[in-house]
Length: 335
Image (tube, rainbow, N blue to C red):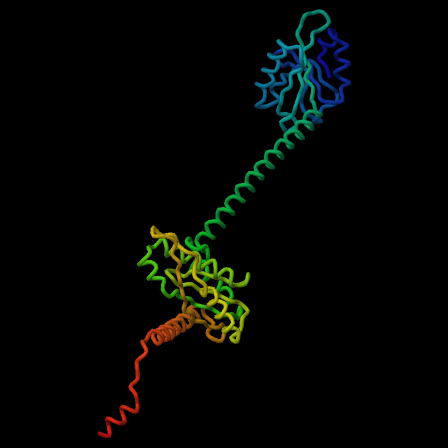
């Protein structure tokens, strides 16, 4: 379609515009439509020669005027996005001149290839952006998970020995009892530890705790759990063991304390340390099915063992008494 006046001035351009397979307009610098293609992207759209195209591009009219001003100073096509066919569509604006009248003209043509490329480019950029964001989120999530695990492990571990602390030990034991897993609990109290602290200092006491922890860890299986409950009290949980295993388990634990601990360096030189242990044992589930009751029974049996061992030591240290000669006694009694 073309205006009758322009038809006489520029017949070649009219012929070219009309044959365009995509929406094409010939406009002047005031956006007046001088000609348009016979095939518009939106059939039935009321765009006729003589109207102003700015009336048909909605809020993007300013973009069209700005593109025209830019085209005046450029020899390259100007790309502009305009409201058209219900979407923000790409157009290409080219500056031309007529056949000698000196009238400046502009060809505005829909560029569907650009919208496909632009959309693909935008999608690719967005995909990469989302992928980077996802990678950052995963990295942060991994860091947070590692930090959470580290903090949880810290709350379950005894700082001096590296064994489970009371909270960590309770969690393991309660979990096994809840699943009705049988096992044996050994409650251990160090004999002579207070004397080490009092005579050699707390640094020596910490040295003892670390050595005891190392020996306990070496004496148990991988599935067993050793813990320091506090002070000089330790515990070991032997899952899947039976009551008739208690003697062997006790012997294994006592063997850990049979040899002197590694010497502790003092100002007066390396001092060997001897530590003994009292042990109380309780079996689950025959002893009890609850953590508290199992621990109480093992604690009571540990103190029984401590009293028994103290009595044995007392007997061993009683000096021998010289008994009188029975013959002399009998002779004196007759007189």
